[in-house]
Amino acid sequence: MAEMKEARSWIMIIMIVLFLCVCTNNIASAAPSGAKCKLERKLVINACKAVLYGKPPSADCCGRIRVTDIQCVCAVITPKLAALIDLNRTIRIVQGCGRRVPRHFKCGSITTP
Image (cartoon, rainbow, N blue to C red):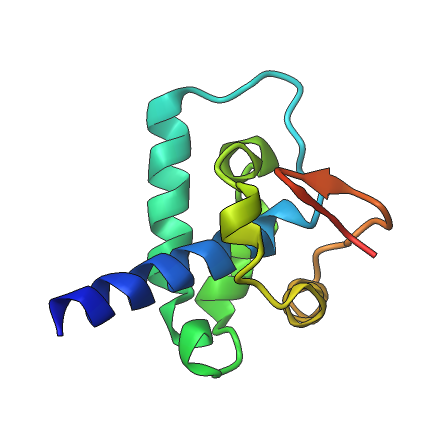
């Protein structure tokens, strides 16, 4: 049971992180600190948990998607994590939250269509 809960947590984290990685509206010119990035990832994970269970993103989740620094999340996307994500669904969710998704943007090991 604990293993299943941990696996769900990782899948949720991956899904939410990818939400942020496929968009570039708020790219900062300077890299944020490690502590700031850790906090931003935690905030978006907490705000977007319901998306993992097939629910649409809440207003709070969309707000986090729009303001989270792209550099904080792209660094943690590995090919193994990216393989677990439905990229097209992710792009639809990000766009539905009002954040632009440029074509051929590369985040971690993923390139958007």
